[in-house]
Length: 384
Image (cartoon, rainbow, N blue to C red; front, top):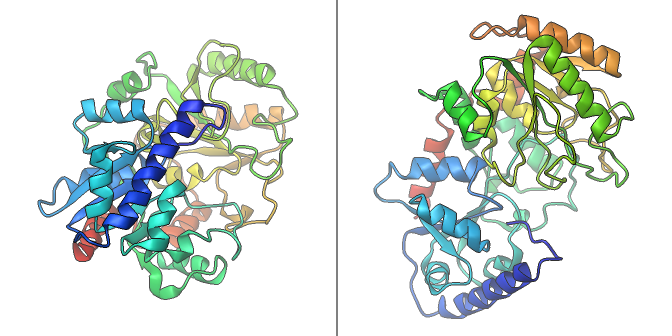
């Protein structure tokens, strides 16, 4: 859960979690751990969600999602998910008895267990980054027992650029991408209903920019256009090309648009946390510097990238040479690229160029095989 500093309930929930964490630090000195595993992140999605779902196929594994958000706890519980609310006695028992904790973001007050307990910590992160990190970043994750990465290429990046010790890095692939490689029998109509979009056979174009990052004055909309101006243009393009647009802002950005426009739908991350299923629905991706591009890469569908300045103070982890699709620098180029992409994005017959294939091979190596969740669960079995 992302803590809203203006919400008093969030401070109460954080206080209760901190209290339980302090008790767990004390009690773990006298109580032996078992094979339980804690999952911790903003939502049960991405790598955490994929690993949790796969773990249900392993009788020896017991993974429980841990959250401060009481409303989200109630929602997951009603769906049959193994979940613990951070302020409850159940959460205390879980923290006392657990063998390992797997996270994909920060830890909040759970960092006390990293400092003062034998609980094993594993990081799975939440996206392959364009944004530059250096040895001063990811300080907490560098203290983890293990860090799971997508490929040997990314392990080299973590070691040489981010300052991680090589022996802590394990290559398992990216569990979240398994669904993109092997989606099973998920229907398009099912996905549209899931995201509250009218069922249609029109092409779906996903607009998914990154947030302001290190540039406080950065706009979420390109070409020096304000929100209403840009979305109005999307609406016009949708009508002209018989398609619909979905706007997906980063979790750290405002989730709702102030105005509505025909054939333009908002799918905010806080309401619809499962990004991979959204990507399955999308025929074309429009992006700038968002790491969502590396996930969409595996679908081999057309993409357009907005050639706008990068908002990263520390440069790149993976630079602009890792972007793919047609580059556009203004509205006219965007309209032309979109018209071309809509015409060429026939279902089941995606266009793909050699540069894109090269990026996929470099970043994912042999680990884009739909088995990353299974490899992760085998590693958990080894640990517990």
